[in-house]
Amino acid sequence: MNPAQTSVENIQDSAPVAEQETLTAWLSLSISEKAFVTAYIETSYSLAEAAGELCIPRSAANKLLQNPIVRQAVAEVQSQLSDIDFLNEKYVRAQLLKLYPKFIGEEDVPFITNTGEQGEGRKFFPEAALKVLEYIAPKKVTPAITINMGNVQRLSDKQLEEIAFRGRVIDV
Image (cartoon, rainbow, N blue to C red):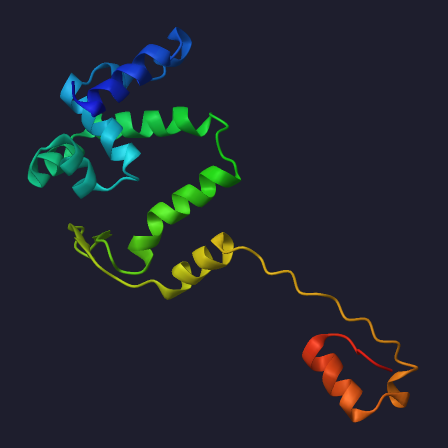
């Protein structure tokens, strides 16, 4: 069985009846369209990755995405997912690490031209890459240096250099 179909079945089976009433477009989709919507959302809205996951040509995936009912189903599932409180520090870090190759230009990113055409290409986003690294990297704790300003005048130049270098004076 296709992994995307398993995900589709899990989404459909786990949704309570009251929630399924809000998924009108989702319920009208075929199994293959539901598989596409699921793959598209699970791959962070990457058309190429969704097509690859489902083993269909990118042109077929693009045609599915142009279908207004499929787009409505994507919006409905997004709405349902936004109500789930699954965001935590670990999840956010995992999502950022998943997006990092796109930020540094190792993977294609989707774009839309001024004429409305969609495409994919590689681009380096230095600000985004730096923000991800700052968020993900462990924070280095720097020791606090407390200097009694009344005693600064009594310290020698050597002692002041030692404070600047080591953060403390060994001998006073």
